[in-house]
Image 1: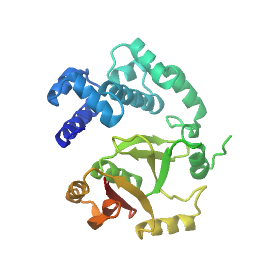
Image 2 (image 1 turned 60 degrees about the horizontal axis):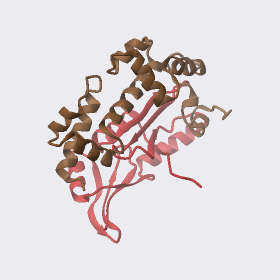
Image 3 (image 1 turned 45 degrees about the horizontal axis):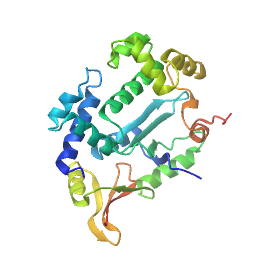
Image 4 (image 1 turned 135 degrees about the vertical axis):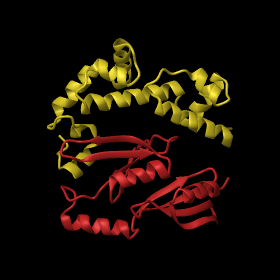
Length: 139
Length: 137
């Protein structure tokens, strides 16, 4: 069972990861700050939040990248750097694994679907919302 | 068979202010915050430990869904507290209640023993009510 103090430390660590997602990540040092062993920290983190600290960081970085790809006119390598990755190759592979398509294709596909520059197309939200709030037909 | 609930709509008066409430007072985190073509802001939040279902914080603006009259009526009903978000669970109702009160969250009922546990009732900053429940073991 996760004690109250453990939960507080986990919560603080999670916020730290979220705030410093661009920086190099070390589970050992974060676990140390939470007064836990890396293994115990990762296991407890997953039990509470449903994902390991590393999975949380990857998800966060990819979500930030997805947003930048649509709303910013930066190159893929700039976005890669902005979300904390050094190698564009590693970033692209990770993006492909998480999103199902490479960053370039993701941007091209969504930009082509949207009628307005740097805005998401209505297809990214459930159709019932697109229909009711935007008057977009389902197909 | 339906597996789970993914999104639940909560009508709010102002998305920025609602986001401030759910994020900075209740401690939720943002799921999505995207401006869709046509200007609709798709804004979702969820508790940190529960990614789904997400609350979709939506303004009842005049548009395809609402006439001007309907929009004004909905806004007025929200302000009057006619709508509820639902029930939020906590491991310690009194403690969470104290924390939220300290952050300025308005409650209409302090933690009270019920058949199903301990419950407090509060309002978000639009006027939507919610329950804070510590389930009985």
